[in-house]
Image (cartoon, rainbow, N blue to C red; front, side):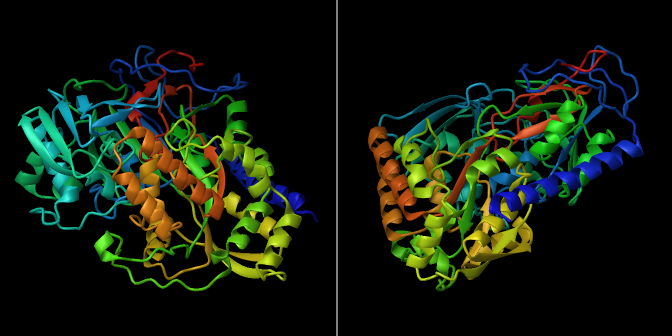
Length: 601
């Protein structure tokens, strides 16, 4: 049996299992009910992607007035919260901040329309000519709200100082846990926050910081918390009744199950929302998420693209992020070759040992790349709705992009099993070898597990026997990566879109648990980048880093992926989100209610 036939079979098994779930739901009928309510004014409108409906979706809701939202509470069926707590600096990762999105805000927003950074709680901003400081004018009238009903005042300069200190002051009073995040090194380029007045600050950097808008924007875990709440009630208040400046407040948190929000009192300082309540539910199993959605228990969800197409054909609608949200790739553990040196700020305080394994050989890494038929995976699994990725962390239109990668990729990385076998023979593995791979679900990436299963089939064709180990990302994989004592394992991951500098910091410069591919050359080149202010020179240095990564076959780059969400068009009109949100989906206040008697088109 050919690898193509096997891979296609693997992918179709996933579809068959999911379709059984669809059939079971169709036979089981509806369940649940909701309370009718009149909505507040809608957010900005945006077109969604869908086929012409052939049937009206079922709804669990009672007949509603046509002038407002048809349900009191919008329910989102999501995959995982990643971290099931709200203090984002504790073992920080931006993947968790979808749950902060309804109630919290950042200094800078990514516009869903343009996919560029712009104002948010920082309403005006200016970078100094030498890129060593920023002046920020802050929002006025952004009130802190909490389910406690206490008065924490309004957002201001004191909060910016407070949030910088949470991350960057090693001895900040009242903080129980040491802050950590792949973004911390960029956040703490800001050495001092100088207060000009209650609504203006200067952020003074220790080195050029042209990417400050990213590090203090919504793609990261640098959420703005209330200084007044910290002073009045202590850090743990951020877990029980956290205050935010967003349009919702958190009212209930059921660990590993759901988070409920209610609309904040009064008119929001910049935008309003269509529902009185919002609820996020977490279910790892795709079949269960699908069943909940079909039964009307959730109003929008994430499923794989086969199921998305089936649901669209039944009359549901799909909307996708306005820009790429993730780069799906396959990494190899044990690629940390840089010399740890405390004096160079490269000492990670980790004692993991690099062991010899086949993936430490560049020819083996190239062989793995050449064994995988990306086009088949793209068409069978992603339905062609992705674009090719060439180097981790680099996007066309962002600094450091090299247009020759696309032209060179087929020759160096393209599908050629015979070339892959020759590379293995050259590396001393003519008879192949055995290896392990971690298999785990990930928020916003329902295709991640079948991708790894398809890769297992392709590698078998060139003599690599891959054993898949089912595990979980936050509780098992991250600690293993951090320890660096699990070399020679493959793992698929969809890093979210970021500015290029922080991709290098987190994945190649040793400032994250990933340790994707680290060498002294990469570290030294990245240090040069950090100390360069000229934007053209930074672009040149980033391109050099990209070509180091490209030539080393640091991993298996696959695709740039848009996030797709399926929704009940009787309840939801559309949702506009950029893909840069920290949790890949966000801008929940931009989910618009369907207010017509018939489902929205």
